[in-house]
Image 1 (tube, one colour):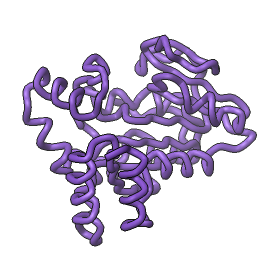
Image 2 (image 1 turned 120 degrees about the horizontal axis):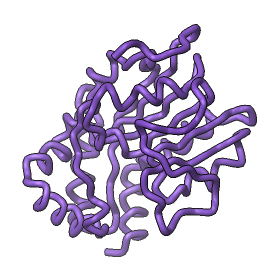
Image 3 (image 1 turned 30 degrees about the vertical axis):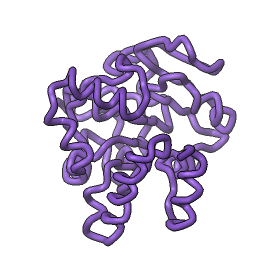
Image 4 (image 1 turned 180 degrees about the vertical axis):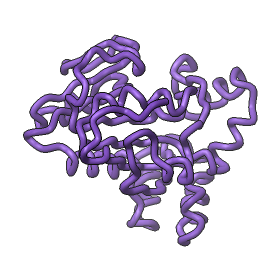
Length: 237
């Protein structure tokens, strides 16, 4: 079963389904204006800055690794905890599939709080630690987990990084971190279409989690935080 064929068939039966990236990109477009200074932290190939950066006054991708396939767009190589940019200089910070890899919470958000101007936005897409689809792989030794994910999702095994899920639940996000307060939270499910088996498994889970209370067990979280107006410096750790 081809990927496009599988997706078209799935969308025929479930026309309300949308990829997590479709929803994320829609929220991103709503968050960027011609006056926005945007930092995309953990940008990977920097494709989002290349695609959407022209909408902002200034957009920069930031990553600790300079990806050899990086798109031709503004880029800064830096560690999340030590970004050489002025305090209160950003209007928007984005983290896509980064938060699950952060081990030191809340410390890892201290630099984001420092960089964001009061009233600024943090847009965060990550995995949900309460989803069985996320819980089960976490029970495996990392070497086994990396091998399984690489085989199932057809990705290089060195792209599978350790995960900690220290901030990956509705409860933890609801409490906020430093001066960053949760404004909205959406529960998303991503159905992969490059494998008949995965399409079937994730498709069943998408249907099972459509009723209201079950959405809390979907595999992805899309969160929007705002920095409290009037705040200038991060709270003490």
